[in-house]
Image 1 (tube, one colour):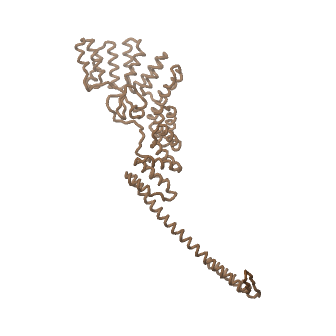
Image 2: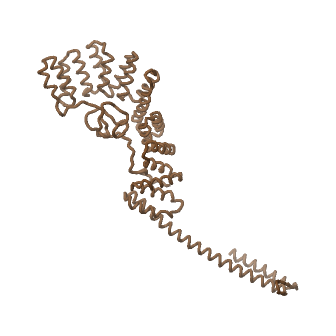
Image 3: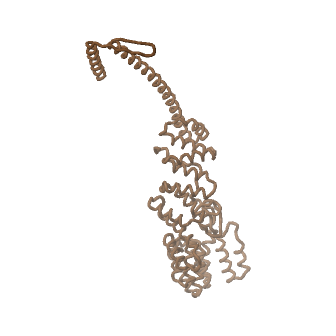
Length: 448
């Protein structure tokens, strides 16, 4: 309606101008080259109007051609984008369903996705290449992901998985941790890498920072922190007693059931003539986690006591412990053996011998029989059953056995996986680097 009104106004205006010009006589003369043209004002205006009209029509024609060309180009681009979006959608479905070959094939057809979906296309290409073990191509895409803020974390995660050297892995892991310290995956793996390289102070910081996010049970977390502090304390020289004792005590307060720590702390107290404190450390750990090395140190600390008094101390040591525990039973039996109360010692040992678990019960029984009845009678106790064994440190992740406790298994590299026992453990305590996926399980429920 507005256009019609505007056209009417312009038409009336031009009519008035034409009427006014018609009432005013005059002429126009043009001399150009060898031509001498003379005509009236009216004819000149009509001629100029025709030129303007033709120019306008020509302009509209050229504009229509350009517009049509752009429209065709836009339609072609739109069809390419539609095909790329379709390939992207199918590729993600294939990726989730585990068809990695199809996912990689479809990822090649996502080059023309809209700019807003480009990060998702790069992610599909990177992840499918990674799953197909095309490391060179995957690394290229992971590096491209670093240029997109929303994909930088996943790009670093992917580069970390592709890296061969521990120094490269930890470089990417540290960057990823700064971007997303709440990620349980990166936290566990950065902690594992720092620990493996012996960077215990950095490992402790990671664990303490994770406390604010409540990503792990506090008891387990405190044990991990305790181990990192314990390992730091080992770097102190022998003459740095005060600093070493402070670290040991801090670690012990966090996890008093850590046997190697308790032994080292108690031994440090003992070597500095603080026997009472040493006994308290042993008592606390013994009630939580009885271990023969604790009892050996306990015997050494109290070696000047009479056998009768030592027996009372041993009984008191296990007052709050599980009465059926092998180490508790063996410690009591040995204490009774030392005061030559063989009857009491044998009563305790009988329950262990019936269970046919530990060689030490047979050895001690053999010693008692030898004292009472001579070596011929005791001989049968020294003939061990094949099923019997001595306890040792066993990795709960790979069943690797070791005579000493280590913070990291020297076979499978799992952290704090050594437990005191005989057979393979069913419970797994490991923070292994999972290489099958760079994408969080719920990633596709989030928008890029």
